[in-house]
Image (cartoon, rainbow, N blue to C red):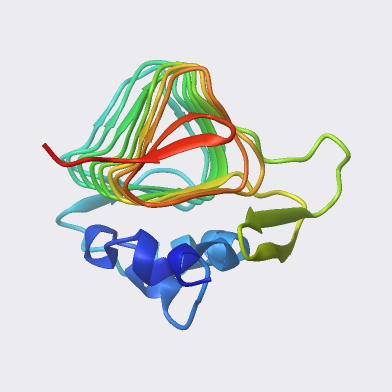
Amino acid sequence: MKELTVKELYTLEETIAKDIFEGVTYPWEVLPKISEFIVKLGETLPEEEYEKRGENVWIAKSAKVFDSAYINGPAIIGKNAEVRQCAFIRGNAIVGEGAVVGNSTELKNVILFNKVQVPHYNYVGDSILGYKAHMGAGSITSNVKSDKKLVVVKTPQGNIETGMKKFGAMLGDEVEVGCGTVLNPGSVVGSHTNIYPLSSVRGFVSAGSIYKRQGEVVEKIDG
């Protein structure tokens, strides 16, 4: 399904991880590759711009990382990013340029494109967030099904088998997720879509939509 492809969801020029998507159709295909990719990319980062701190952790010298934040490698924190107090980066994380990882936010096996904001009490695991995507306070990605079965992506054209047990959400460019929302395993949200607060999202949501509740998704009207 074309709308779920990397090309349709993301502006690849807005991530240092552009090369990981080469030859990939669907973005979730790169989730198992993030760790190795970070280690290889990190070794090539210019020393005048990035500082290596600990094992396989590279932090841009222009980034602001609060003393109480915890960063486990492999990880790359991009230029002018902000990692706020008590943030918990568990590893396999790329935080894009100008991105914000907020108070008590937890990341694991993720790619955050440039200027992503996950600023207040968010959990983002096994997920990819596109350019300027924003998750409201308390919104999370649920990355494992309650029955522990492999995740499928549900679309109007049928289900897409991923073969993955852990798969959170793929958010396209400039997606706005309302406060307190749960993005269930295998959620894919097209670019420039708004999700109402306190939503429970499953499956695919088309680009340029307003998600009000399950079964009530309307197209945005310009102006």
